[in-house]
Every structure is written in structure tokens, then in C-alpha cells.
Length: 193
Image (cartoon, rainbow, N blue to C red):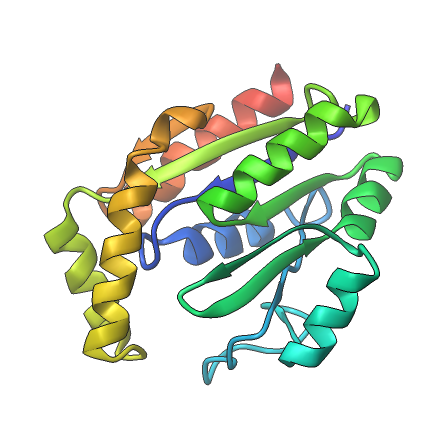
């Protein structure tokens, strides 16, 4: 049975790094689902690999065509998960990995409950920062957000942390290596389960 693994948590908690390592280590077994966004790519990001980058008009067209499983506006930018890749991966019996926000995880959970062929396949992990101060340090270390954007992300993080109980697993972030090993252990146990 294929697995849909959704990893969520506040901005800068390390989701992307963990997802990249999982994909690298389990190449051919676990496939990353590329999500869509209207935000500008960071200098190291590649369209179609890190995200599918669309402008507002393109994104809104896909919304009108009901292409999204879910879509949200986060930090003033639109993000979405397309339906087609999830159903395609499921049909080919591949494990898929999503790096998704808390609202997106809730929408994905609902979609999987409503689609009988996906029942029991979704497992969710929430990565929780040690503290808001630690999260602020991580966001500032990226040097890609203004002070106003940092404050917005921290405010959103506080709301996201309150929803950790919605997830199957909660990992309190320590350092990159420890976090990765914890999530890898969860993934391996789910594959064996």
C-alpha cells in the first residue's frame, strides 16, 4: 500500500531540509509532490523542482478549473496542492511526500477521508520549534524576509503550534540531524507497518 506522508510546521522549522534528505535517501521509493505558489522563488529554488511558480492570474485560473486539492493564502502569497499528482502517484503505488502548511494538511486529511482509495494512506508529521525565540533566530538566519515578514511568520507559527494535536506525530525540533533521524525513523516504521 502506498503512503502519503505530509510534513508540516512553522516557517523555518526545517521542513524543506528534511524533505530533501528523505527524497535523496529514499530515491525511487519516496517521491516529492511539488506544490504550487505565487511567491517569488528564492535564489536557490528551481521552478518545477522546489515549487511550481505561477503568477496570480495563472493560479486563479487553476482555482476556477478546480485543479487544486487545496489552496491557501499564507503570508500574503497563494499556495496549493494539485489533485492530479496525488491520484497519479497513488495509482502507480508510489509513496509521496508533501511539505505542506497546517491548513493544507487539514484539507489533505479531509480529501483522503472522502476518497475511499486513499483511506488510511495519509500520515502527518508536525515539526514543532523548541521555542518562538529559536524560530525567530532561524528565520533571521535565512536573511530572506523583512522584519515585518518575520513578525507575520512568528504570529502564524503561534497559531500553527496550537494545532499540533491534529497530526499523527509531533517532533520537537532540536537540530537538523536529530530532527531528520526522528522523521526517518517514523517513515521507516510506517513503511513496515
